[in-house]
Image 1 (cartoon, one colour):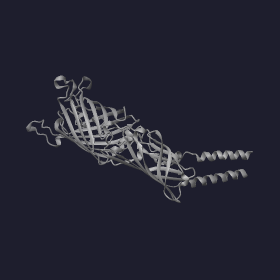
Image 2 (image 1 turned 90 degrees about the vertical axis):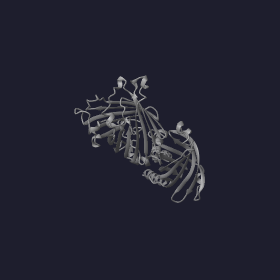
Image 3 (image 1 turned 30 degrees about the vertical axis):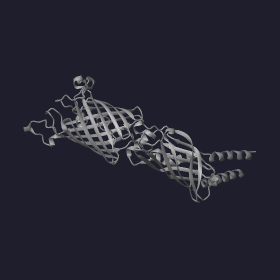
Length: 181
Length: 288
């Protein structure tokens, strides 16, 4: 009998601790910006999923490639068809550890997140600096970093080489709220 | 002893639960959106070769298309293998919405003006609410303005009209292979001789095979159930290569038809492809 009670208590404690410790957003935003001699290309994704585990200081982000919205529909089609090949590789992900996460209190601070960024089925180690703000009800993470297209096997044909930057600026903003299962 | 084991067992679960991949949690949260995935880019262009594909221009996009068909390659060196002759068509096509495209064009062959509307009725879908085909409806009116009549026997405007209706049914089978069936109805207000039918039914077959991200090979065949006896009409057969670069799609074509609009190439083709009556051609499109 004792054992059963122990188990039940244990699971209650376990679920309680999980629901307190994780923060999630389903409407994170990611924008990318390519600046070149000929044109500037930009696209927004407002349906990015991101989760922060406040106990372990781990973080994960999942981005649906098809949810990037461009001004020109044809650009969006080419982005999906020719560059990111979203039918074959529908998602880009990031998974990593927030370094010195325990120093995060209620003031905004810069923290480094070290992890693996996967785009176009290619995974690269990456350390990204971001602004973290923690309140009672939320963890806000925002910042930007550069992605080198070549590293992720995204080919730019010679004809449009001048239209697309080799490095793309990625800006992100995630407002995580407590996640209850 | 049992309790010690239990503690270890629970510790095992504990670490397992905590190390549960955060990405898996995100996956379980996205699952809701995967119910209905619309299949896109069944074909690269709005044409398979001569005939329309299920693809539409997106809303507010304007496409300018220049198409050429040279003469028959078997005309020999004197005609530079057909390059001395040509039929050219200019066209503007505009996306009124994501599902409705309107277009106007003018072919030098018989000085023909044409206009069309194409509506995307059903989309191919994957996921829970899947649907196997994409279906578009196509309608066009063409008017022949060449003065190929005796001055006394002037053709009226109404007598110069042609109508075409098509149901485009396509499926993207895999990343690299798509096909389309195209039941077609053509009505001609005027025919050359009484024995020629005013109404012609035809069935089109088209497909594309993608050989790389930006290059595809296309084939197209229209079988006509009724034929004009006055011109000994043949079914139209065409092969093409699509090359895409940025805002352009470039198509190189071999076809036994010199014309590029439905009312003509489906019902008025006279060339024998395998006898060498092949027209070299190209389509260039630029989207604004």
